[in-house]
Image 1 (cartoon, helix red, strand yellow):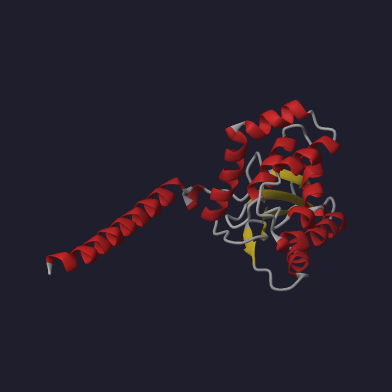
Image 2 (tube, helix red, strand yellow):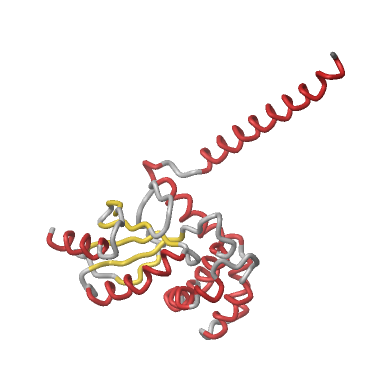
Length: 214
């Protein structure tokens, strides 16, 4: 009986250990996440692509450069930015989804380019080439470095920014704040501080029009 019970006891011990480990992870994860009450949709260091001034409708997008839905929405967003130029403020924030191998690498590349005032150019390049590297199961950081070189960036400064832990931390802070705001998928849009439920392709334009009408 004692011999037969040993495997059961060992299995129970493993199960308890797994439950405790999961509980610790959950508590640590909760402790590290920002307080929802202090989370901001738009921060002073957020990347503003279009500034429409004090009376503009504020549109904020949480995005993942590897997300196919974000890639599909990219031309829609570009058309709306042009159509409503001067009437909206458009800003983007990082939300690299854990299941995408290169989403964080792409965001780091964009942030490194931002340090040289080239965020929008890298933002465009990443979405325009998404089909070339999206869903890859290995790092495409070298390819993103090629994009930086093609954009004429100072490569020593770019490499230093990519290697700087503060760059990835900047990406991570957007992600964590997004979670605190209830973001769980990409793209997620906020219009004048309110989350937008996207069900049809024209929902974003409809929401902008409604906000402009007041």
